[in-house]
Image 1: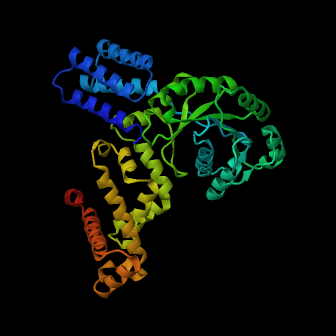
Image 2: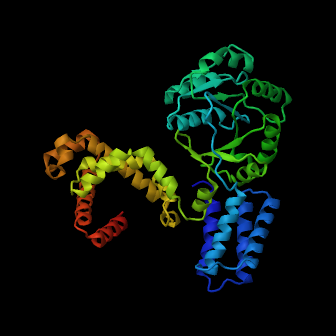
Image 3: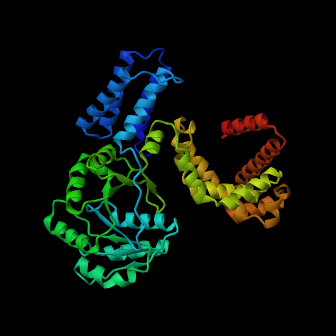
Length: 446
């Protein structure tokens, strides 16, 4: 999870609150110290940490508990509200109304800026916009070639000229072509905000292009130095938002997150992996909800929409209500889950499940099992997928050879199918409690 250690520390702190008999000053002081320790370990600026925790303490001691909730619940609510405000309060929406909307991407050397351009292009393209990318990095060898390859991978046109040595000249050359697109993402040379030569080049490009969005890309591993860099870039080209990369790694990340909010340049996206889909909108409320183990239902629904269309979901739902359940249905469900991302990330989004401490090895086993089952199903005939009960004897031998999976994997899949079919029949017949009991047995077995 993003900022996993911080999340674990905060959840442990809140568990102390919920398990305490009374909310007294001793408990409040312990809570404040635990939050301070967690944030400082996440590389958040000391001054910011003490300011935040003092505000939390003052609210807890002075505010009356609203009717309808307990003092413990009010305390947790205050922590949630103040952390959300601390990280920016509201989601920053990209402005993509003009045609073309120009998005200038700036950042430090090695921050993952060019890769982020392709992630952002795919994100916008998924929302029905016609997107192009323009390479203006005249300093890094093969920068344009990298952008071209990334564009090819996601079917986005890439413009640029590696022989030209002036960013403004490159933009002017392709300006007429770029008018045909809804959104144009402009990749600039990586630079240190304190390098005057590069800053001058950026200022010249920004003055000519007049981009509607100017996004700064910063790696989570930069720590508290993010604040100075964000301030300098902000002064140079008045950045409208920040994208933080490498939030999936070992970097503490808290310094980059909080420093950017303080400078007035809100975090817009966070990069959570290497794949082009690994870019999440940064919503402070949902982010804090996940940190505190409250889940993120909205995020889960968004991922589900991307994995399966409404028509596909309705069609599958109708078949299940009729009591129909084949290996094809199971396959569709597995495909939808795989598109939503790793099981660990999906569990983070589900309230309740996000607080369950499952070992990473167990999650890895589940993902490996799903892969093997897909291989098995790809080796089945249409008849076998529609009526798995006929998969016996020589059919199993043939599937084993075709899939390269052992007999146990085939039998495990058939067992999963039979349990799924029983559950569908139970739900159809109103036996919800029986179905829930079966789900618990299934979870325990795995």
